[in-house]
Image 1: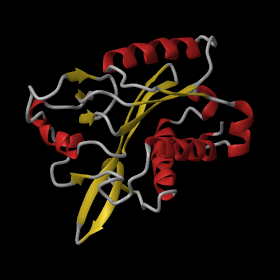
Image 2 (image 1 turned 135 degrees about the vertical axis):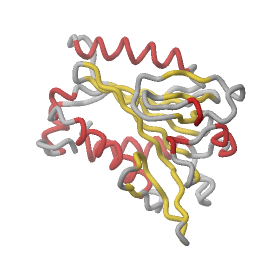
Image 3 (image 1 turned 120 degrees about the horizontal axis):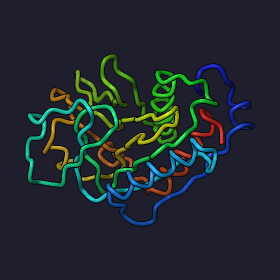
Length: 222
């Protein structure tokens, strides 16, 4: 939960709306919708929203991305994203969670908010008996494969405008992992990426969505 409130308090005050896109969502359209929703939340004209989507194959470049980390520039479209971070991949089989919350009423703690997004993915993975872990100096969620081998299963990139959050998380369910080869994912070259399917857990996206919703309620309320 965000620091300074309990799950019960958060649940009583905040009931975010949930939406699940039933087809691939173009990245530019998603950003436009988030921008509009953030403005409406800020103005008190709309409720908070958690929007679960999948994108067609694409790369995004965060505010600290460098051109050298885009290894195959012509492979997929590349979009400059206003979120923090470096290059990341989005595509079918990856669940992207766009989280639009009014952080003014949730402690106004950016560091705490990012920690809670990490915890959201950790608890979601735990429901499938996968141990997701944080790593000092590396944003996102990691899986220890043994023998010093670690692979990233979840990414985080956030933007906050007037204390309203947008962008969010990306959890690898069953994407084509070879597509990550066109970038240095999140600027980290020495470790790989994985997915639930690659770990031998062939769950459906609907099952992952149910786990995400249940885990979210534990941490954020609603």
